[in-house]
Length: 163
Image (cartoon, rainbow, N blue to C red; front, side, top):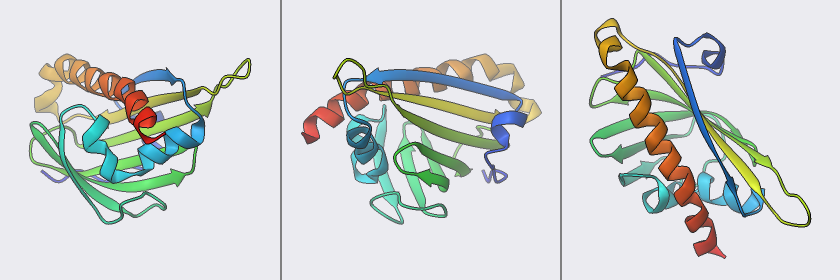
């Protein structure tokens, strides 16, 4: 199923916006290194079984990838890569109906305090659903927040494994 292209404006205009965040005991550069490394996503992203990308490391808008997360296969294009603070993707195609337009953004913030390196990672998903998916909206929201929440928590282990 092909999706309409999304821009960052969707954060303000979407029918539905969800978010979840985590505070990690790691530097912002360590966290960015894992997020930007497409090859690492199978290690920390919940249910990610396969990743193929135009580039192993995200460096610029326009780069693409295909991510398999049971049961979805999703094609995405980077619309913003602002190292080390923001990673934003427009979903362009899925094997199962998910949305008309969908945007996923990771905002990464240095929250270091009292000499301890800390980083907050916030996922925001913005999407417009086709009318036939409105009855399952709450299920979709729960699954997305749960998947990203688990994944962001697992990100800590992936960062530690690289040290």
